[in-house]
Length: 594
Image (cartoon, rainbow, N blue to C red; front, side):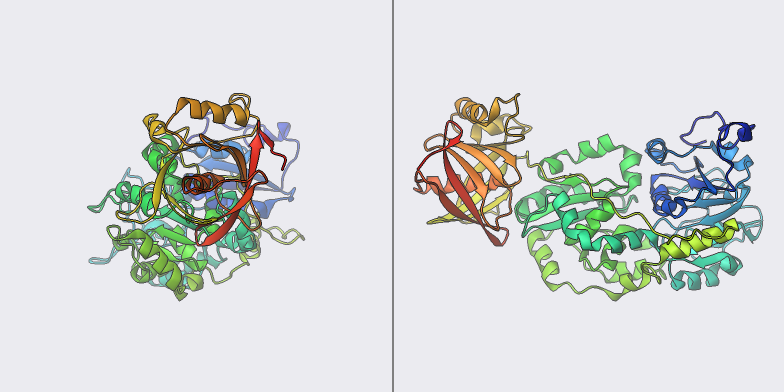
């Protein structure tokens, strides 16, 4: 049944709909959703029907996928009439579009077009038994006439084999959308009966990423990536053998996450995670946040798995992933990819994704992480395969798909160009380091080297102090902190403003030397225990976390520095660059007069 109401829809389809509908559309197009994963590809193509008053859009869910979480919310956001699956099967439509196989698609009363919801068809998936469900994309039980794989043949490829394409020995799809001729070649070998239904129409998901590349810097700023920082995106498919999973005799992520936070300095690296929607909704967003709590407090951001993952991929400097489609898309964009898990047994060995997995560099999860990351970034040479095989028609999927859909609808195409929706600019999502940071510094006159991470390598040189956010999980951290940090609007009435908060912190925590209130992306106000109050702001060309400015000032003062009445400028060295920090003397929250 799926996550829809049991009551049948009465408008714009259903008994007596003509009486109640304000418009009688010439054609009805049904979007068939299996889960949030497949729905993402349907949302990609939805704009191809915009502004056409001849078309009424409907949506339904087969209910056949085990991953039903998030589907109801997605339907609500789409705002389309939701037709219960049983009613959808009994309602004539002009075109049904699905991005997966599952449910009784062959019983739909209308023409059917099926798209891939990944990089073509790559995963091996045996034919489900009676009553079973195909994990992640729904399932259908093939008709009695479906062709069985021959004796000794290998496991069929999901979506590209007779098991998935034939009913009673015949194709039940009117359009099997492929993104590259190599998929057609594999189809011709394993299921020649379906070749006539195939159509080459590119990849709308990848085309949206290609169109968004000029805005890469905006996406980076939305994620709070600073100048000189490298954005490392951790990516996992939903499979137990995936990066996030604990199958295949390994459980990598729990031990790797704290090491990444410790070995990759906070000001040099930005960490974000893109998890497959089946992970996100299968276990529940709250559970994912609970499992990754320490990582998030150490600066890891979780990326919306439907609306923001592509933007994160465009923004990334490095992707650490597995055998899922996101890793392949990243490589196709020319981004360095390190594979934490391979999962080759899950892939069609003839698929380009399998070749990529065989060739891509590996991450030794037990070896030094920073050295490996820097080595891959410095020596990256894009592999030829991903860019060549993601799509044979880059930038053209909108025109090709609309031509295909309207041909099945037997309607002339609209006169306006076929266009996809641009990837939206995500909300501002900077890192929040509420886990204590160990700060290593070196001071030479007005030059201060700063490196912050959750742990520092044993025997590393330089002075060290502890910087702790006031919202740390363990209140005991505050009793040991040299620098205590808070961020928010400068006049937050709950805190009494920056003057009151900084004074209160030093009074509550006698061990603390500096209280720093970050009030903007380049500004903070600090009160010191021994030297008064200062405003720190980014000088020309500076771009790093203002909380690091506070640590630089603390180290400089501890090494004998003194701020003259007219202020001074420190040169903070971090993330491979120099960031001038303007230091102004404050009296009662106001700049001192020279």
